[in-house]
Amino acid sequence: MATTGKTITVEQIGSPIRRPVVQRQTLIGLGLNKMRRRATLNDTPEVRGMIASVSHLVRIVDEA
Image (tube, rainbow, N blue to C red; front, side, top):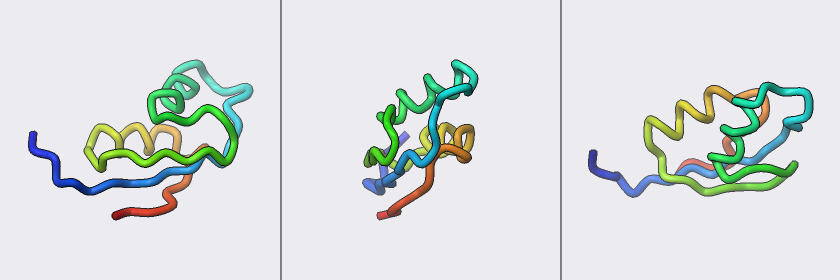
């Protein structure tokens, strides 16, 4: 699978407290573990799926 060079920046807006372990692990996989922390990631279907699974805890800040 070729990378397109596109990136996506996400920010954590929700706390992982009282959330399932899987959601906590997904946040860590995205590089997020504290409120208001941002991470810039490659825009791939895998990353989009991870964002969708914790969409109530993160928001997309920038798509480049």
